Length: 514
Image 1: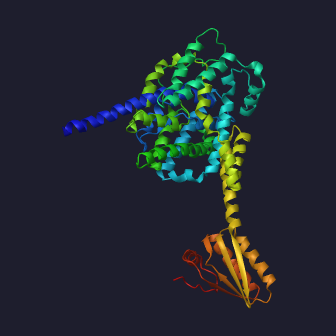
Image 2: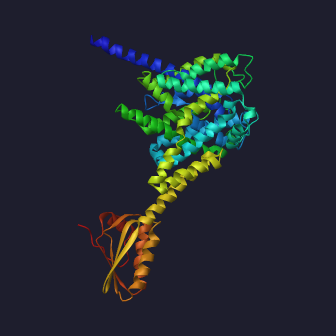
Image 3: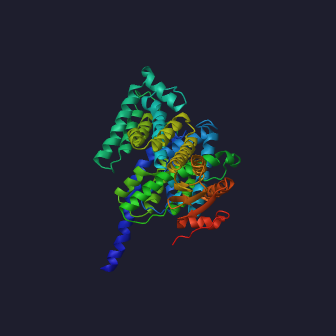
């Protein structure tokens, strides 16, 4: 009886992975086509990005549920990185997308090997909130022309949205109707059950409509059939141009995979290794670059479906990849799919990520973090399509706000009991607050010229870095120059440590803590 049970468990696990992997394949096929268009690439590259990458990732993944493949945010970042150096859709652009995927993959593998999985923690919540909301608005803008069936819209994403909304005479009623039906099927499917493939049903409906002579809006067009070629023939000479963008995509894109994997692992009370996942995601991107795809990441919606469909191990992702590979010889069946369907699928997938109310609420809680969120949001819109630069600006703005907050919380209290002037620094003493110590001393000495001794009490001093210690040395030297004696007392242990490492204050003894 025991043998039967042990044999049944692997079979049940295998069955669950097969069902889950195939279920996700039904979703990723239309999404892959749509996200490829969002990235400025031919739709078929989305199928290639959904085939070998999840298969390759499965061998290294830490999360048993994470589904790797084309995702909206990474697709938009790809468009932003490449659209300024090549014409979207051109052979040069396609080749650069392949190389960019390899660059992203190498960065992630490298970060994983040096155990840099915590790097995404340096992107604060307000930065992610502002960037995600701004990028999602750009994604919606990019799909607006196809959703409304408008031809000849501007290339700039926000200009495109404005053009579409202000030219109702150019709207195509059939495309709009099909977009509405697609959105209804996607959202309706989710309401019925997460496993209902609303996007797949929308594709079937779209193919029926697209084959009607009365439908006049844009269709998908020719799609190559057959398996992708594996090739190292990439424009390696352009590598330096893509390094910064690749590093940003590698970091920003992994933040989503981190959130997904950690959430699912906590729910199941399982361990999850971000460094191993970085390697997995890196290998997936390298596979995408060598097999005709573009940068990929972890999908929250598909990972959730994967779990609900009964996935038992990371091999469900491999099943998804194999299923997509099996479909590739028949991909030509999608040539008559209206682009309005793909546009509506993209919009339906990301629209909930526009979180303006959350940023408004943040304004009522903390002006500093709200400044970071709104600053990143507007930088993302104004710098479009170079939204990768907006991420850097957001991180920089967060750092400035943090430094200002830490500096403003540092105060120096003084008390005069003739002939001793007591100086008590309170808070964090670092390079951003060091100047305040000298300013406070100058003001106190001017106010009490009869003082003959300075007593520096460090009991309220918090964290102190090397610059802070140098500020204390400058403080002591300034006191001596004024002809006063200086005494230091009540030194906490964390200050005593850096005191010893830097040599302390010349000529000033240190009362050791108990």
